[in-house]
Length: 93
Image 1 (cartoon, rainbow, N blue to C red):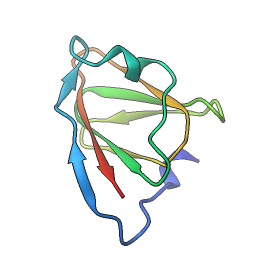
Image 2 (cartoon, one colour):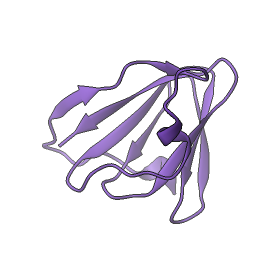
Image 3 (cartoon, one colour):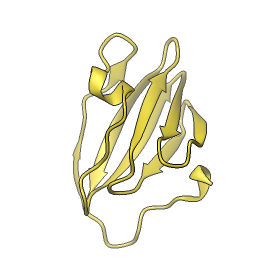
């Protein structure tokens, strides 16, 4: 279940993307991609709702404003930002 994925302890925050919205989200995030091996991502939704889709399991989750979704390394996924959504992705290793 996507909601139950947590960051392992001992990881260090290495960077955060700019805040994206429907118009500025890179096209690559809208299609299957993955975080590098050894790197964990955290989708942080600021406004609206972003749908996170795990390509491997086919499971999806609507992440609301103030919510987050942990993204394990090497897990194919994509995002679908809803109208008015803003979000960023943090990277940890």
